[in-house]
Length: 432
Image (cartoon, rainbow, N blue to C red; front, side, top):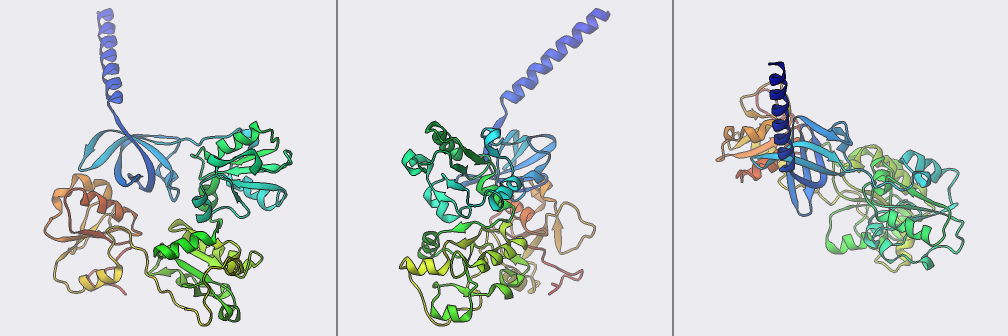
């Protein structure tokens, strides 16, 4: 009997093992950038499409402890799932794709280590090489970096002195472009090579300020791209000439409200310029803006060479007065409703809007809103009427944006989201 029981357990374990192996083998997977991650939800960008994943209870995290590791980084992840519900992938596993490491003995592993060398003992003693495509370098690069796209890199592009330190970097720890360029240099006999592993993404995520080329700024102007161009020079210097479309905000008078509206950043690319490369005011101003957290919402850069470089390149210059106020609006995300528009509609009190609170928990409940945590939304869609306009909200817009995408792909055509808490009182009126 004991032997028979043992055999039963062995057979049962074997069958379960085959079942589980089969389930894993048939699991689907997708890879993309995690643009928003708020437990238990992840919004994943893939080329031109957006996917939504919800982490199942007990889901496995690989190379990360929690979804908090994805905050503000746009990192590549792999989701494995075997079930999909209401357009949401129910994930059994999320994997942060591992960094593509260069030889550790030849690497700056972390931004702190690189910054210490870059701004200290190694200042000026190296050649910093950006091997990304030229357009990426123009849109933003580390101060002092020269553009040498890996695809076209030849030995003739590098210094004749093969003992000089060459430092390479790329987009981020998951990119191999810089590694390929560094390996070329090694093959050509360069002996003193270093690689900055966290790259451009790691540098900027810490609030460090990249340099933006005049060519990129000019392209944004020509294409009609909305961005903030801030001139921090004195009024006298501005009268003598400034870049078209710039606004004047002297660095010493810069306040948070100059780049924020309604408590949120403009979410527009922001470029600051001074007189020249030797003018520290532009970098100080950009660093101050980054300290307010603006770099987590949109790019910040300092114009390479400042105004003098712009003028000498023959690009358009205006003289005389310059605007002192912002002439652009916050760049709305797809599906967003502006707060001012929301207030006008809400104050009519005609019941046309259903306010959907997607925060994870609520200590208070109001008659004028429906509360469904974003992590439960895909299971509770039948509670939301399709004949009313739905406005989703949370505290800072991330969960509301995920809710918007869930509802849109399930046939809710009249849905938008707020990027902030609407601040509605107990009586239903808006607190100004």
